[in-house]
View (cartoon, one colour):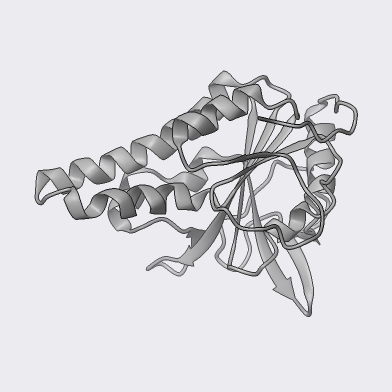
Length: 218
């Protein structure tokens, strides 16, 4: 059983920047949006928003740690491609069910089909719901009623910017859904360094990390 990790935050809060120390490490990157990283260097991987290609890439990835950047746009892109032709009434509900099913199936695939020493990070924007809770951004209440995304993760880190510093919040704070296992992180806030986070997670679960590498992919 692989470990899925959800990372949420506002645009510019440091989600992608947290990858800055993953260059030349045992990481692969799946970019849902074709945009450059906010730092120099390269993390090899794929650019796609096709669920089937993503699942194939997750299996083929040589790295033990894989990041799906802008994962929320899997939902957005699915919606934008199909909402105008989805019809009305029951067809609309079926369309939203499909969107929810695809994303749910991706997380289930990570958990059930990948080796247990794989860690997969999904990065999403955040939003404030009607109850004042900070949660992963989707496309509306109908989808949220179908899938509680954060409930499918044991580890949810929130990116924030405080006083010019980019941080991860490791536990529930300020109405956010942040959470992590007891004793995994010593502090409520830590530096948003995904390489260090990955090391901490692997030490906690007693995974053995492979040699540093940045495998080329086709």
